[in-house]
Image (cartoon, rainbow, N blue to C red; front, side, top):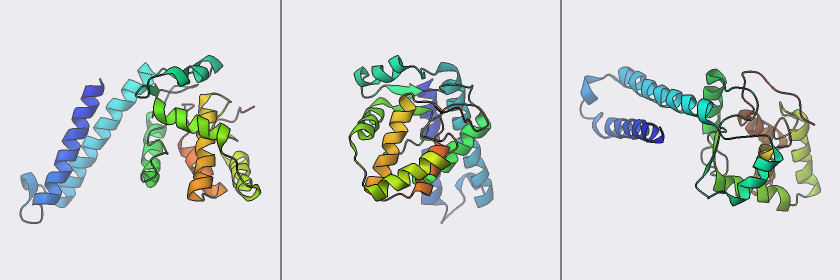
Length: 202
């Protein structure tokens, strides 16, 4: 399954690279720029659909404390995949992945909230426990706690709460994120599943 995703990604990469290399001198496969964009978009959408199908049916994520505690012993290259609560929605999933592209230069922000490398999860969970915010920085964090869709980093205090809580602190401390910016990242990174907002944090 992961090989199929990789093959699709390589096809898209080769297609885009070929376009920029050749298009200035001659049409690539006789495609106009508009046709090229449509073809590329189609390939991207297909790759995303394939990944969604896999994650929505083969997730290992759980809200349990036992799962949260098990992350520390996972291999760094293991993946935390799938939704914690409700079934995933393709519509919402595509919106999230597209929205998170805005932050692709910040490597600590997972580009896919339903597919997170264990190594990054461990780092951010440690950040949640270890980063000390100043009084002013805490105001930004508190704003996100009050204004995010889940009223926190996740809908419940599971592993995502610690991971994205740590991410919030890291972004405030190292990138000077405002409360509004952390709120946006948390909203785009909601991993509860479903097509609607969740509000059952406790």
